[in-house]
Amino acid sequence: MCGNCFLWRDTFARLGTTRTFPPSGMFSTQRQAEILRIVQTQRTCTVTELAEVFAVSDETIRRDIKPLIAEGVLLKVHGGVMLPERLDEPPFQRRMQENLEAKRVIAARVADLVQDGDSLILDSGTTCVHIAQALCARSQLTVVTNSAEIARTLAPRNGNRVFIAGGELRADDSAAFGESALAFIRQFHVRYAFVSVTAIDAQGRFMDAQPDDVSYSLVAFAQAERRVVVADHAKFGHTALVHAFGPEAVDLLITDQAPSAALTQLFAAADLEVSVGMPADAAAGVAP
Image (cartoon, rainbow, N blue to C red; front, side, top):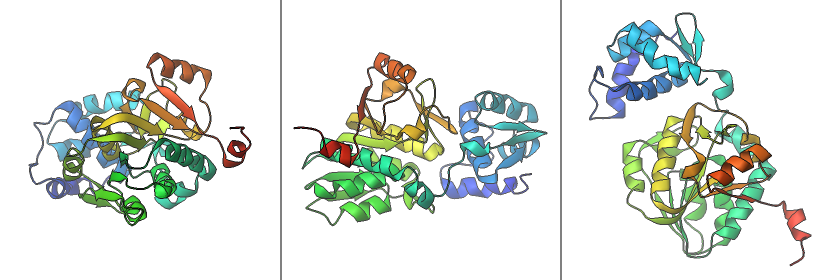
């Protein structure tokens, strides 16, 4: 089990200078978010260990985890909880190669949408990395991102201006997160925010594997005139660790294949536009 859970006392101090421990005064929803972070890192924890971390009773922790178990984001085991394997994400470099053609199709569609001189926010997902590569054909862009990879791709190109957020650097994808990164993003007003997700469930809810990614996406959407999700067809009908937002929060979904009739109906009811990209060979065969 989670023998190192006690180390989160020091971790809280490192992650935020304004947070004091023990966080016994936290609201339940705040505690639930921190529980998800801990279990995602440790893989499994007992109720007692979590209670010690948060300086609350075992019963309080049981109340906190009950809805998380009901939603399927945590799995109940004897005396504690664990992260279901199916909700975890593979390493970044492996994700870069998954559904590669689909991501290129989406990236090409975004490159058609974005015009020279446009302003945009990109997240650090693999689809957005492919989008950055496709946008190398554009010029005079203003790009705001938390991804070092995207910044390296677009900064030297065609008179672009690239602004990169600072914060805690995630080793897996060289992306910055935390309150300082979010505060940085809030300075900007852009035409488009492009964010990726881990899954879109049967109810049309957009979900992600990382709480930090959700926080970034929500702030990015708040700064944009048009809120765009980029997601390939493999994301449809699945769930992930964290519920990010509903279809009503999105203006445009760019994908490589049309979603199911049920999802299409849900999106239409939420006034969410769906744009389906075309493979390069198919697009070449379309008459002007």
